[in-house]
Image 1 (cartoon, rainbow, N blue to C red):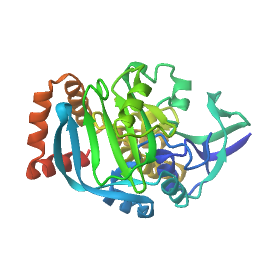
Image 2: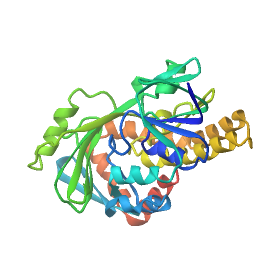
Image 3: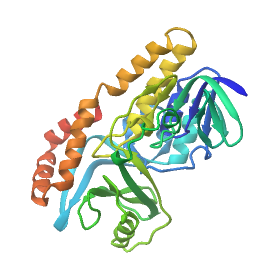
Length: 339
C-alpha cells in the first residue's frame, strides 16, 4: 500500500486549487483525465482568473449581463467587474502545472479502514481532501447522511456553434420551471443550459426546446447535481472542498470562485499541518471557520432563490429594473463578489 502526505480526490477546480498550494508528497486522483470532465458553464470574473495567473484560458469577456423574463421583457444589468467565459481544458491543465502533485487516473470508491480504495489499489495518507463533487465520495463513506439529496439543484448544458456578444440569463417558466436558463458565449461557440432548483424529470426536454428556440440542435450534453447548502467542512482527517462541501452560491449557482478560494485556503492549511506548524485539530478549526464564516449570506441567497421561483413576473421585473440602475448594480455585485 502506497503512502502519501496528502491525497486529493477530484482534479477539477477545487482539487487543483488545493494542489497548487502544496509542496509535500501529494497524490491527485480522478476517474477522468485532467481538463476533460467539464460539468460547468465555465464562467467567472476576469480579475479572479488573472489573480491565479490563468488568463490564457479566457475566451470572451462581458461588462454587463442581460436578463430575459417572461413576455419578452429584457433587462441589462451592468457588472461591477468584467465577467468571462473560459476554456475548461486550458484552465485545468495550466492550473495543474502550478502544483507539484502526482496525478493518477483511477476511480475512487471511498475510504475503508483508513485507506482510500480505488479500482486499482489502496492508498494511505496523513490528510485526505475530498474534492469529488456533489456526491462527496470520501465524506459520504464516513457519514452516510453527509449528502442530503433533497437539497440539490440540477443543471444540464450543451455547447454549440453560435456567436453572441451578450451574457444572457433567462427566468421564464416557458423555458424552465423553478430555475433559470443561460447562454454563455465562448468565442466561436456558445453554452446554452437550463438548471432547476430541485428535481425536474423534463430537464433534457427543456434544454432541447430552449436550444431549438434559437434554430439550433443539441450537440451532446453534460450536466450535474449541485448542492445549494453548505456542508460540514471536515470529518476526522478529511477536508471537504468545492461542491463536496457545498461551496456553491445559491440562486446564481456560481461555484468556481468559491471552490478555488476554499481550495487554496485548504491547501495552505494542509501544508502547515504536514510541516508541523499547526495540529490537525487546529487546521480543521481554521478551515471550518473559513468555509462557514459567510453562511448567513448563503442563507440570504437561498431565500432569494426560493422567492424568485415563486414570484410573479411583475415583481421579478420590478426588482430587476431596480438592479439595472448602475450605482445599485455595482454596489450589490461588489457585495456579492465578496462572499
